[in-house]
Image (cartoon, one colour):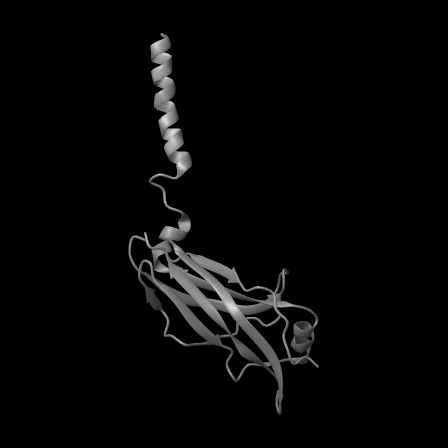
Length: 165
């Protein structure tokens, strides 16, 4: 009986040790798309038709090296929101991109895409006030085919908009 208990104890402990050590298991980052926003720089410029939002940021994309194949990434939505808050200060702006979307990314590949606020994006006086009241975040949504086209949402770090009146 003691021998059977010892054998059963060993049989149960080996899978627990393997699971806890991570043997045979990959992290989500090694098999899925990771995305984040960096190098954000936004400013307000005064023009003849009012204030214009200007600036750029980098969309960083990486598909894990153990992904089952490549993925096709498409852009959904971009907005400016209060840092750490809810709601949109400047909803639905469409940045110009340094690459054409949808974009195919292979397993293990990293891409940095420069996104630029279009020259034609003017903002209302109330939006200028909101943008200058505190820090903002760039919010983005994208889809990738490897995750069955589910939406991935991301936010930049908080930043100040320069050029405020």
